[in-house]
Image (cartoon, rainbow, N blue to C red; front, side, top):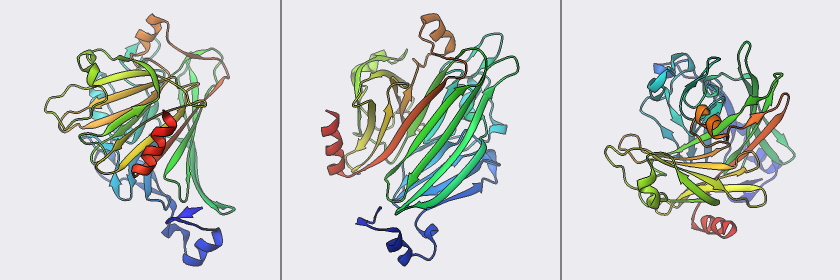
Length: 351
């Protein structure tokens, strides 16, 4: 492993530590006050400066994200909201959005709420409010590598209805400047079902600031409704703007050896985020801009759909399905970009 700029073995590390937790750990905590009371978290640090937390109570989604003490994620005005206090009815869903580094949209819907007589498909779906089951956490040596992993599953299902299971593993190792998300969705029902999924990754200040650069491997885009007027400025990140209306752009991604890439880089702070994902099952990317004062955020969101909601996708014939007992895999890697040299190397590779 590489730690503090040096190649080190297991023996090298243990000579210098009485307890490996002084360098890297996974630990379980519970929030004890406010709207987030009862949220169970796994806090993870891997010794490279990466610290993040997973919400066992909410789909193992990622709440906190820091690098060398610097905040990278959005925390919305609502703060953490426990699944028991979330109100998903109509526009009220905005009062239950915590932001966080990532929340999962789906599995029955991404976008506008829709009721079809069988179920109400909430705005951006139900799965982000489903607590994880069969959760396990590990931190252990594998040779000279110290690896940290959290696994669990979420079942999005209903009587006389669908039965989709999301099995998730998020893992990292000492010295890595990032982590990996490995999701498998299986249809354990006996009829094919619609499948919509989006990884709502949310970045904010101080990483996001004026003159941050956004980049992506893409072959074309379309503005989401209401964003057409700003399409020629879609790559710009500005200072906060009072009353700014959110804008968004859906890209068809292009592949580099089976993967697509997107990220941001703050040239002043010399810090950025690179997100890579397999485009086989995630062929699109949503760029979301909220330059609004007080709700200042930038989203990079790999997805399998056009994010217009289940009803619209069905009308357009773009709704995707998962067959009975079919498994679909979604693999995403998140890496911190630390310095101009790393950023310039990335840009070379992505040209």
